[in-house]
Structures are given as C-alpha cells and as structure tokens.
Image (cartoon, rainbow, N blue to C red; front, side):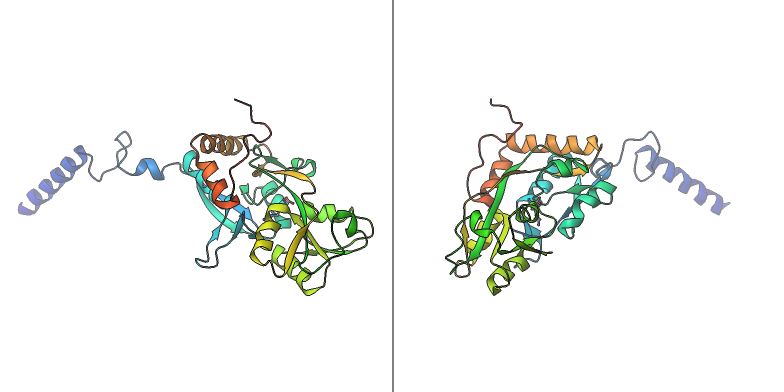
Length: 274
Ligand code: ARG
C-alpha cells in the first residue's frame, strides 16, 4: 500500500511538472527556450581555395581561414540565419562541386563569366577585380602584356588568368594548384611572369617587394560573384538579400575597407543609382 501511494504521488508530481511545461515535450506546448535558434538554422558548406589573399587565405598566427570572402559569407549567414562550414579545396574543383551539389556555396574570388554561368548560378557581383602581371623585381624587359609574347607564364589552374595567358601569342603557360607556388616559380626564375587577379597580386607583391613587382596595370575587368547550384533560388535569394542588408547596414563597406584597404566603389553592376 505504501508503495502504491509513493507511486501515485510520483505520477502526480510528473503531471504537475508537465502542466507547467517543465521537461515534458507535448506536441502543442510552447517550444522550450533556445529551440527557436537551433530549429531550422541550416548549415551550408562553403568551398574556396586559400592561397588567394586578401580574399581567402590561412591566417599565419591563428591558423584559421580568413579574408574578405570568408568574412562576407559568414556575415551573410548571420543576417540570413544560416551557419557556414568552410571547406578548402583545389580551385579547379569548386565550380564542379557546386554544380553537383556536393558543396552548397562557392566563395573563392570567382569571376562571373559565360562559361561558369552555364554550370552554376551567381549572386549579384560583390567585387570588381581584373587581371594583372607580376614579374621579378629586377626584371626590366617585361613592361606590359605585349612583352609577354613567347614568354613563360605561371598561373593558377582553372582561373581566368590561366585562360587569358593561353591567348598570348607563343606563351608557354604552366599551371599551379596554388597562387603562392606560381609566384615562387617566378621568383626562382622558372617562369618570367605570373598572370593572376590584380588585387591578389597587389597583396603578395606588397608583402615581398624585394622579390616582385607589378607591370602593365589592370588588364581585364572582372566581377566576383558567389556561386550556388543552378536553380537553387532559395539559397541564391538568401545570399543576395544578405548582401543587400550588409550594404545597407554598412557592414559590407567595413569589410571592404578592412581587406581591400580602400572605400568600396559607389556602385557595382546591377545596382541602381539612388
Ligand atoms: N578570379 C579568378 C577566377 O575566377 C581567380 C580566382 C581564384 N580564386 C582562388 N581562391 N584561388 O578564375
């Protein structure tokens, strides 16, 4: 009998706790605190190749991936309610991985071009880049793109720079997985020049002015976009909305200033004049 009452009071206690919504999950009950956050906050994988400072690279001190693209996509996730999982990979695999859905987002200084638009969808442009030439600091024969005819050129595999270099008459083009290795080849004398994105060249040349210099100015105008799988309009809208929010709240300008070192241009293509 004593046992029976003990049991009964236990059942009543549990019933009481449930009534106050403590612990028991009942279908119609109000969600416990904290549920709102964890519920439905998706994590998207983000692919990039990390020898592309100041857009994506490994911070030497912290060992963490950082840069304009990395902080931009994280900030977009923050205002649009998603988390990101960073995945470094070879640059030439990024568009294909996004295309097959292996990776959700490509954020890697990806130039928007016709070829890639057949494979993936791009966000609105977030940065205006272009190509440029790097030579050894003591080089005095190569002054512009004309002088690259018949020369040996190092490039990063799969890039617009690699494509451009192959249009130069008589040039011998060597592909490297990493921009930093392509640069090393120039320094070592294995190549006469590097053709690669201008802002990235600027970053690396500024870091080792004794070894390198830039010649010939900006060659092509290109725009960077964030890539998603074709037809993934839900994710593309989040990214575009996020970009707009960051432009409005000043966060985009802050990141631009931090990583590029200057104020962002007033308008990128696709942006209306106010
Ligand atoms: N903008 C060039 C392209 O799209 C080069 C990008 C290289 N990016 C990188 N993270 N290595 O082809």
